[in-house]
View 1 (cartoon, one colour):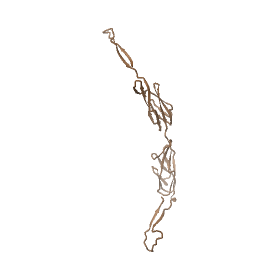
View 2 (view 1 turned 90 degrees about the vertical axis):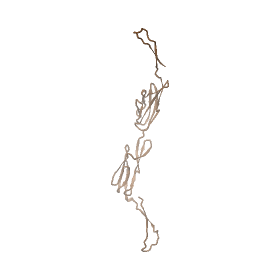
View 3 (view 1 turned 120 degrees about the horizontal axis):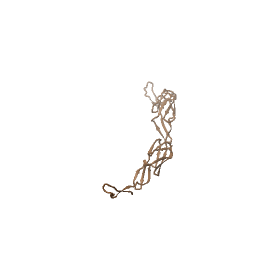
View 4 (view 1 turned 45 degrees about the horizontal axis):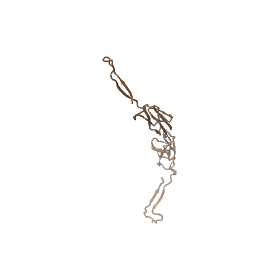
Amino acid sequence: EGNVITVVAYDFSQSPYPSAESTATVPAEPVLDHIEVSPSTMNFDTANAYQDISVTGYYQDGSTANLVSEATFSCSDISVASVSDTGRVVALSSGEATITVNVDGFIETVEVSVNIITLDSISVDPDNIAFVSIGQTQQLVVTAHYSDGSSQQISSGVSYATGDVNVVTVTSSGLVEAKANGNTEISIYYPGTPVVVVPVIVNTGQDPPPTVQVLSPSDGTSVERGQNVSVTVRAEDSI
């Protein structure tokens, strides 16, 4: 199918009559039957994440074509997501939105769901420290808590500071060491969350004395004056 063009030529220097007719058929433009978009749904969990929409046209003659450049795009809620003239969808904030794709009156939609997971807070274990001997250490463990209810231990990006380096020190990895008797605190920093403070007490007076047990000779063993006796002792310290 198409348009038929008939052409004749004149050469008046040779003859007043036209040439024989010549015909040509110009194919008709294909007729669009429907469009399809991909993907049909989008899910995002981080702000500024993006995904592109592809638009395919299906014609009555069985051919197909990429129609992204022919399509117009619109978003039902521009606070949730944006869509460019080329079909790129960018997540902006948590919520639901519908992207409408229009090609010459043929319309398809893409459902967009945005659930941006944010960091709510951190917790530190233990939440307080009591040392009873100089040189005693304690590792701090930091856990991040997110808006979707999930949590995970973190180490990268965490900063630690001691209130008194004469009482306790703390390494960049969160290892606390007792240096002298006293009270202080460790402050734990992580970007975007409130500072967490862990109280620390160092009191060597609370260190229980070691226990000593004579293993041999056994209790009640007779020993003569001047006799050499081998004594075995076991001492235990709780620290």
